[in-house]
Image (cartoon, rainbow, N blue to C red; front, side, top):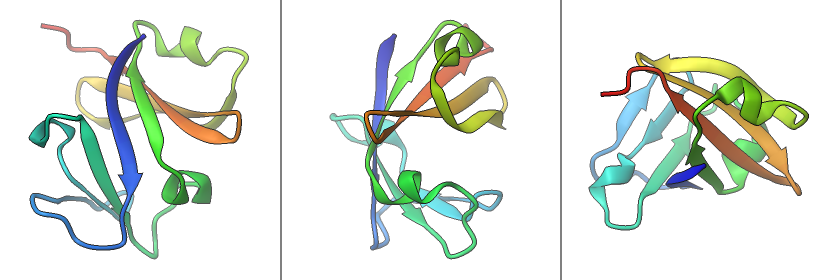
Length: 106
């Protein structure tokens, strides 16, 4: 596993936000700051679990997503929010953890 970013829920708009309509979420680019923080502002129609919307999550890049989630409590099933990446969320000791597998490796 390799650290990817830290996602922090936010109530206020942040500079550089992008909107993801399928999730009703505004988020910043984790590469826009030296700490790898992604600020997440969730809308009223966001279908993601409240745990993800309310608690900060850490994200890790994994080689094999299916293997990484095996035996874990999956709270968001594997999906592809954008081309070349598969993600899933698990719950670890009450906190959300995001796992990402990049399928288009360069």
